[in-house]
Image 1: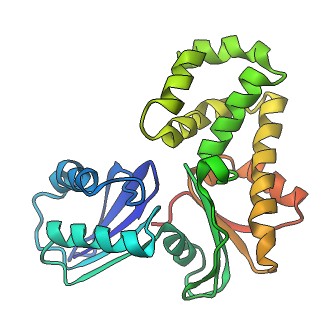
Image 2: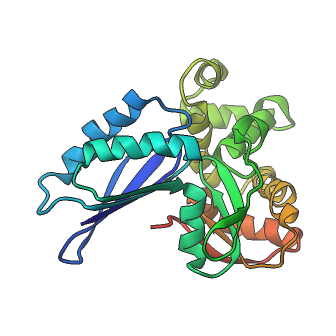
Amino acid sequence: MKLTADSGSTKTTWLLNTSGAEKLYFYTQGINPFHMDIETMESILEKELLPQLQPLESPIDNIEFYGAGCTVEKSVILKNILQKFFPSAKYVIVGSDMLGAAKALFNNEPGIACILGTGSNSCLYDGEKIVENISPMGYILGDEGSGAVIGKTFLNCLYKGAHRDFITAFESETGLTLPDIINKVYRCPLPNRFLASLCPFIHSHLSEQWIEEMVIECFRKFFENNIKHYNSNLNIGFVGSVAFHFEEQLRKAAEKESSLITKIMKEPL
């Protein structure tokens, strides 16, 4: 049986192809070897994934894991962990979420593949491998267009911009106050997940002109700081929950940047 994983910073989707050609999906929290230690990753596999897989009709002999934070060095660490928990697997590959997205979007054709989820990323794909990648630089220095940056930009506009009159509605609906926000961003783990968790609220209030314009501007910055540096006229595709749910605003941003999006997928699997 083959187990394939697509992991972002927030969620990992696992696809199990059984011997009977049946496809089963399982979900755990995101596994990011760049931000997580070995104990945390092992705990997720042991406590979240394995209980969902039991009992297996036959052993897993093939694993492909594509995830955020899977640099060359970190991929080796995660590969060793997977082999520890699935000793029957004869073939284990760990690659970047960017490579997984490119394969899902273009198969063996070249293109510019993009991810917009909790974080953001992009690459120039030649149909087999990534040949160029503009560093996303994370949600503090980069990650334009990501859920984390949209959330961060929204909070800045809300509490420091010209839309303080919307604070009451925001705090009433979410139950959050400014001290809560400061605590979650500066004192709690994984602040990028918290910031991205504001996207459903933001999406539900796109009828507010300033909110939609803010989202479009976040996407425009993604095109300006990433896509345009590839100097290519290849097809552009997106995967990720933010790209999927904010498709209308993403396409508006692309049009303003004279770009054409050919495909948008919620998840690579």
